[in-house]
Each structure stands twice: as structure tokens, then as C-alpha cells.
Amino acid sequence: MIIKQAELETVCGITSKLPENEWPEVAFAGKSNVGKSSLINGLLNRKSLARTSSQPGKTQTINFYKVNGDLYLVDLPGYGYAKVSNEIKAKWGKMIERYLHGSKQLRAVFLLIDIRHDPSANDKTMYDWVVHQGFEPIIIATKLDKIKRSQVQKQIKAIKEGLNLLPGTKVIPFSAETKQGRDEIWEVINSLRED
Ligand code: GDP
Image (cartoon, rainbow, N blue to C red; front, side, top):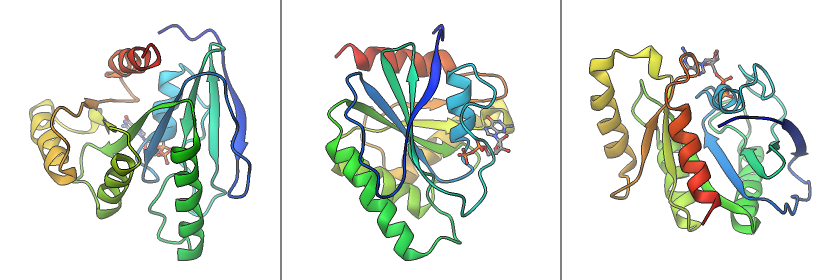
């Protein structure tokens, strides 16, 4: 995928009105530190358009990146900050629900899981929740370069079992270091926007 143009177009806080975009959207969810910013930068061939190494407690937002004028990558707030109060977590839950439920352009939700670790209870909750909203999440197993090649299939199996994935659910390993997986993710995105 050739990126001619990529820009952060809209940033939504907890009480913001969500944009009504005229182009397809694909969203990315995952716990904080899973590598979501690095993935978005990797997909967009940018070093630091999306922020990386987010600090716990930093302002959380839903960010809409417009790509080549006719697609949005949507960065959902990372979950799992221990330091964030339950009240804030609940507000964010509502905000994300409002987005998943309300967007007319959302074509798919990608859920990021660190390939080194078994999915957490929060990951499972997020997966079930996205399914409940009527989407079939696509899993991206991040930080592929951090494990040995011989471990990859075993870890993918652990993710499948840990999330109890629906049969046929795609799991795409990705490394922001080597960009392995980038083309496959773009293929999926491009196939979805044609539907
Ligand atoms: P976010 O909080 O989900 O946006 O996560 P970041 O993209 O900020 O990544 C968290 C940390 O993991 C940073 O130090 C990144 O450099 C590192 N990281 C992210 N993806 C990869 C990857 O594919 N390989 C390696 N080796 N490190 C990664």
C-alpha cells in the first residue's frame, strides 16, 4: 500500500461529538503498550504520527487518521491502565461503545494482542464486546520480532484459545521493527472497504 497522504484529522475526548465521516473506517483496539501506535505508524509509513510509548494516565482520545483522502484508521484508547479510576474506565467504555455502535462507516475492528503473552481478562472482555457489537474482530499479534520463529505457532494457538476465537478468525502476526505482516493487514483493510 502506497501512502500518499496521512494526517490526524479528528481527535475526540470523552464528551466529544463523534465525526460523521464519508469514507470507510477501520478501528484498532488493544491494551496500552501493546504496540498500537507503532502499528499505525508502520501502516502509514510514518515514524511518529501516532504517539508511541504512551504514559499511563495520559489524556485518552479516539484519533481519526485520514489516509490517501478516502479511508480512516481509527485509534481507540488503550485499555488496562491500572492507575485510571473506575469512573474514567466506565466513561471510556461508554464512549467506545457509542463509537462502535454509532459509526456508519466502521468496516472492521482490529484487536491487538502482544504475541509474547496469553490474552488477559481485559483482552477477552474487549473481544467478546466487539463481537457483541456485531463485528468479527481481526487479531493482530504484535511484537513478532520479540519471539523466536519456532515459538510463533504456539503463541498464535494460545491467543486463539485464550480469546476463544470464532472459527475462521484471522490472526496476523506483525512486527513494527521488521514490518512483517504490514502487507497482509493492508490486504485485509482493502478487501473490507470494497464490500
Ligand atoms: P501503544 O501504547 O499500544 O500505542 O504502544 P506503543 O506503540 O507505544 O509501543 C509500546 C512499546 O513497545 C514501545 O516502546 C515500542 O517501541 C515497543 N514496540 C511496539 N511494537 C513493537 C514491535 O513490533 N517490536 C518491538 N521490538 N517493539 C515494539
